[in-house]
Length: 384
Image (cartoon, rainbow, N blue to C red):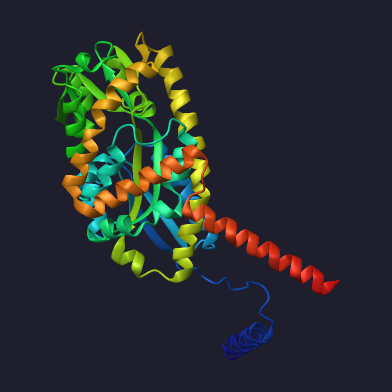
């Protein structure tokens, strides 16, 4: 019995000694086995889209998110909400105004929130060159025009970029080549007074309907026609319930990329510069995206349907252009002096681009370049 107790006591002493050695070794060993990793606090920006996955807006949003994440070293993630996830179009605008999301696209329906944005719905204002139009609209002289910024700012919105998504193409169950062909046609337009005025001038009966209801509206005969860029006609299957696509090149589908103003004003200069740098990079990118998507989608439409494509001649387009000019006065009456100044600024940008003249911002860039060249020459002379 005494022997057994002695053995147990010895074992306890031995185990205690072993434990003491392990603890000491752990305490004195260099901390090289598991290096600590610094945690990055991630901020999420919500971005509401008016279109579904695979659209121009979605591809723009994906690229914007990728670039912002890279430029912020992973500190900022942009979460995309394709159409339908946040409700209808007006729901998206309400949420970005209220700050529930930070970023959103706004197009024709935005006219009910920012009346001056209906400027982008005017027909026959831009050139026939889509790439040039993208550059004109995103020239700082227009994109950052004080009247544009003020118009959005009054609605707690900050315009960041202007994104043309392709020509607006008419669909119908008959060929439309003249204003007379529009007579009595119920054509869907966005909730935008200027569009209603425009298509009334063409002789049609403009009708407002939510984007998600259009297919059934045309299928059930509630609508005779529709106005969308090609990619939208395809991805929403609108072409399956219409017989003709009519190309008049009267206007492009234009969306404004915007942010909540209070949120934007609260950003650091670094983050504001990051956004500016990114939207400038995306100007040529989105032109290539919309060109590719609209071309691919038109091929899909023609391969999978018997729909007939109608391209208006210059003379046929002139008849619609003539009817569209008085609508510019309607726009000025609707939005007042600020909107009229903004319209005139855009027209001046277009005319300057068509004539080959430099826009004010291009002149400034040229002067800056000359100044830099002069300074470089002086530096070289000093070095010599």
